[in-house]
Length: 267
Image (cartoon, rainbow, N blue to C red):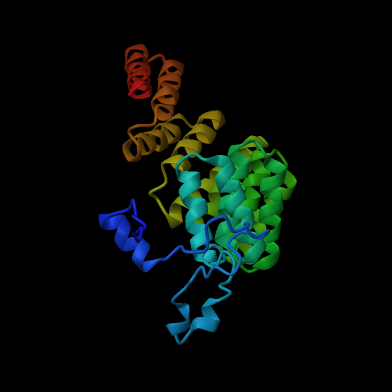
């Protein structure tokens, strides 16, 4: 009697077996290369752009400066410093003249106490765009924070020569002059900055500090009141007003200012 071969697969497995017959594959030796002769894109031949798609560019999306910049900013915003540094470096390797990327990388370096690296990025930015006043101001301000006051003043005066009404340049020049003890010069720079833009609580605060040290109590008080009105969340103007009022023997008012400074600082 003829013996028929019975299959153990039925239903869905049977349908698969019918469509993808495996006869003859059992016990065949494996190829030395994985997936040899197996088409990873079996239907690509029907695509008129088949040849163009065969070798897509490596990291095509990541080679876009816009995407890299977005990725770097996102990482920095989320506090992933290492990822942000890596993305900014990759961005600048691809687009060396990406000024905003250099500025942001410089700020990231400085926030990690890497002042020399930050300065290097600003040097590159100024070299790439020597006519941009904001880059000179940024580098001058960084020189000032690094206590290289001569280089700071040189950059800031260069910026002012290019744009005499640049409020940030005058403000940062005032900061450098105040730190060097040139109080009258600092007062002049702060006033020039505020003449251009009077909505600067920091400029009002430092003007008050300089006037206080010069002994102009009324001028200092007015400046500090402007600072506290524009930024009520800053305890520094209240603290300095307390010191000034103490100096004037207005004890109760001084205590009120000290109390206000503590309340603001605790918020």
